[in-house]
Length: 278
Image (cartoon, rainbow, N blue to C red; front, side, top):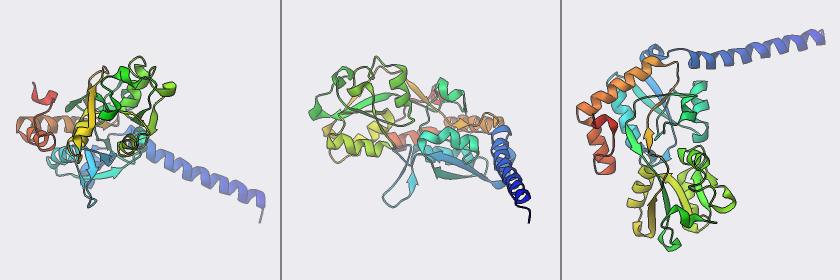
C-alpha cells in the first residue's frame, strides 16, 4: 500500500468530516429554524440550573423556576415541548451559535455587547444589580467595599457592569479585580465562609435567596448605581420567526393574566414587567 496515498486520503476524509460539522453549525446559525422546531415539537433552552428563582434544581433534582414556567407557558401555545439543557453560563452565546441550544432563557440581560451576537425577545422582566454581604461586615454602600474581596459570576451581566463602570466598584475592591465563580451558589458559600466580603448579584436572585435562607437577617442587600437591566430571551439572529412567535406569546400571557400569576408565584407580588405596564 502506498503510504503517501493513505496519508493524503485520511487527511481528505478528516477535512470532509470537519467541514460537515462546520456546516451543521452554520446551518443552525444562518437559517430560520422554526419549521424544524415545529416538526420536532421540541425547542431546547440553555440555562444555568443553579440560578434561583429563574431556573434551579430542587433537592429531588426537579428543575423549577420562573423562567422554566414562563418558557413552558410560551411554547404550550404552539404545542411545543421545552427541553431544558444545563450549560456553562460563560459559554451561552457559543452554545447558541453552535446549535447545541435554540434559546438562552435564564435571567439573560440585554447588553450592547450581547446584541452583537444574539437577537433578543421583548423584555419580560426588569432587574437590578445588588451588593450582598453579611451584616457583620458592616457594608452599607459600594464605598464600603474598598480593599475588600468582591465575588461575581463569570459571564454575568454583573461581571460586565464591573468592567464597564469601574468607578462604582472595580477601582475600590481588592486588587481591582473580582473573584470569579461558575455559579452564585459557590459564591454564597465563600461569602458565608468569609473568603469574600461582598457579592454583586441580580436582585431577583439575591432577594429570593435571602428570603429563603434559614437566617435571612444575617445578610444585607444594598442597592448599587449600576443601570437597571432588562431580562429577555436570547435568540439566534437568523431565527426571525422564532423571535416573533415568542413575542406574540409573551403578549398573550400578559393579557390573559398568566404572566401575573407566574410573577406572584415566584416573587409573591407582581414585579416590574414592561409587558404589564402598556
